[in-house]
Image (cartoon, rainbow, N blue to C red):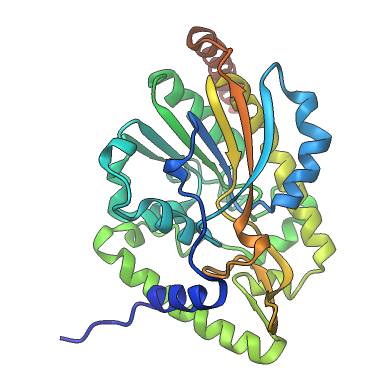
Length: 332
């Protein structure tokens, strides 16, 4: 019986040879009560927004801006390295509710979704076909619902922004280069097919990037986007997506009690070199490329322990009901 070569093992070996062993922090080993993940957010991009925007919008929470090293350069690698393993016992998962807008998270977790107290795939119910993504307001209202229902559980809230597609109409023409259609097929989430599909996908990406390296001396997980638009326009588009998601993130960290952390699963490469000895540029976020722009991530700690659970639930319920009424009014 022949076995298929696992591209992941090959890529991990190459990555270790180029960058050394994975030095990333394990999410479940960190200290937090609620973890908010902004998908695909560069640490320097977030730092600029933090200085201009965050401190003016917070109530009385203590804020600390730090950085961590992510265990993955892509969402799939981040999820696989943090959760699809036996490093942690069931005790680490049993009080965690994972709320995700990103279909790749479902795909990467496979049967490991059952390790959490609950796994909530927001995208399956609130996927906006016009935008090609999940609007952050939907993630916000679902997060409030599960906090109100299970106030003593820890939440991981995974927003899809600032990852494209871009919500702002000024950048909608860029969205034709970014599609989640492959991941949005429910058949791909069956546990017994997950690894096979991912192996085939990785082989396709490797083949695609061999051609890209030969023709452009570059590697990218989104070649259509980066090779058909200027970097200035793409950077502005990422900023716009970040501005769309931040108001909902700030409202959550003001409501949720305890230690709240805002971070990202991985960064974004804007043409940095893959290695000091190799003149090949990297764009977007290819897996196992552990350069700083991809694995150095923001880690913003909000100490909200001065807010009682009773007060948090009161604010959450009021906001949840207001959002529900607003949503209903939109239909009339």
